[in-house]
Image 1 (cartoon, chains in turn orange, green):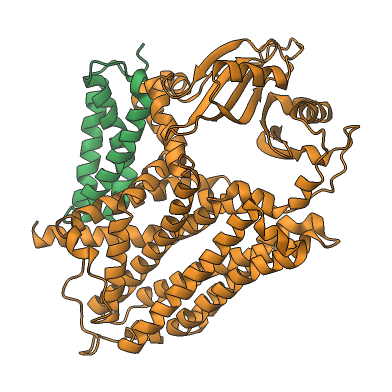
Image 2 (cartoon, rainbow over the protein chains, first blue to last red):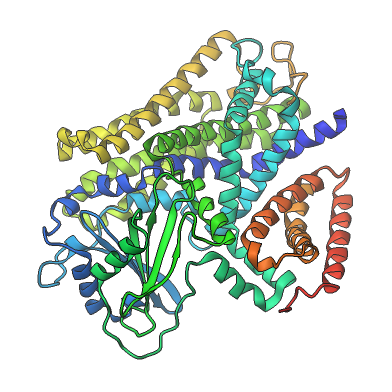
Length: 524
Length: 84
């Protein structure tokens, strides 16, 4: 490849990386913790599960929720488990609002007994992952970020293809510091490349769905696009209410119908649409284990549980066959605990990739153009956001438990978000106040300490015996793994500092390149 | 700037190119719509890279506007929009 073309590829890779790196860091870090989303649900409010009525069942929950909220049956998901939950949609002033209620929220008479509020940690981590916790526009923003991330990956492949083998063995504690960051970035990028392609493509597919639908419908296919897309993506078309009430078959019949139609289905949810109307449709969804595209559906009529369609491995259209792995490949829930742990590790490595990429951009810009305000600003912003997000999430975990057992229990979810935001702002302010080298020396230790503290606070308040419960083991284990990763990164940083002087940018001022810090002749 | 142009002008171009592909292939586009949409995202990312390879931003901009125009004109010769 011509040197000029390669240089343009490197420039594009760097620019796209710097535009999207921080958003991707937040998404990947929250995504790593989100790998244990269901376990975190249990971790955040174990008392709710323990106090669930012994005879709690989904039918009782469904009847109670629909009796209290007549429109809840228009679109509702029932989630089975120790403490079944109902997630339903309500339209308020034209806006869709989702509500979640658990079986343990009600007594035998159907009266609400659970106090309002509680922890919202798992929802917050999830929101941070897919929309940076920015309502409405966050998802579209992350969709575009995913496409740009895909462009950076294409550029990365072009840049590194010819020297993949060499870069596997390139990480050495020799030469200048920038070379080390570059080798680390390349090594992590090369090792995890296939997974990044998966994350970028599936993330773009989910985030850009509305944008692609709008543009493709408006420019290419016209009004025929939407019905075709609905047919291609949904197991059964969304029913319209007829206005004629009808008696419903009931949850037990739906589950029995699903077992008969697909015996291997592990039910994960029951989706109800227009429940109580003669056009009601019920979709019993879940997983067929052992398949990558494991999501499956058994759709039936709501009134008599008559089978309408089945969509699962070996019995679905080409469109559904392609749609199912988009979700499972992104969520990493197709291969059991091992794959989830691997995704967790890959997500943390992804954070390192984006962090090192931003640092390389800042140092390279300074080396090429001399003292640069934008490079100094970007370095401080990178340090502030990355450490702020990590510390903020740890603080949300730490604040959660004391709040849950205090008289202000109803304020737990807002307190978690406030703790996150305040910590993020403190980290940003500190990053812009102190020299980057000081920030890089102090904050990994602070973050590691906070991630060690979070499981201790949980254990102190709920008993250390809970650590042995599988869900707690996974969540607390993931927090401790983050702490261990930060300690390792800090150790590597100190080791590097002992062997080579830092780039001038790190000490607070960007100086021209000196003999002690030569420009790397190979910018890739 | 070139990457930004690629991101903005590459989106409609990617969708129209995929539409032209759907028109060219003798298979009903409804049967492989999900693949078409996934492909359109890949084409969009490739167009961002190609725009980034242009020597100057205005070259990238003019090239993308022209390509969008040509793709739109070609799409009018197909029966895709609003067709059965």
